[in-house]
Length: 143
Image 1 (cartoon, rainbow, N blue to C red):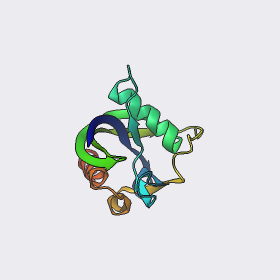
Image 2: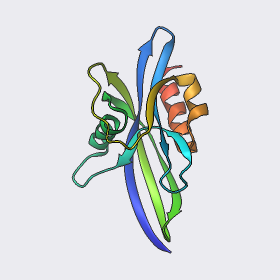
Image 3: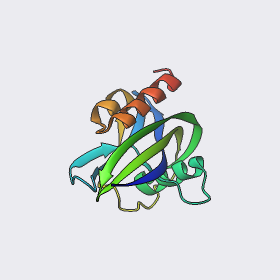
């Protein structure tokens, strides 16, 4: 099995509302299993791009929001297999504050995007590393 490495970045985008704190999450069909998944916006870092730049870009492309980075949350590492390849993946997560304004054009990767109460987000997210990122965000935001 051939080994590859992927480095990605994404964020926990939050906004404060009367009821508390909400985060942006998205639904899509997993490209490997075709199962519906719920996830945070994230994606591969392009050549010459910093992790922070990639996180801001991926948020804009996948959930159509402008956001500013508040600070790093942490990184997750995991492996998965696809087409006879073993991929070691590292994802850098950032806490990101929503910048109100017009919605941006989506790249079509997500089927649905929405705001979710931060206390409910971890239960909705499909993957454990992203659930962990929500926990890190809650700690950072003091919720």
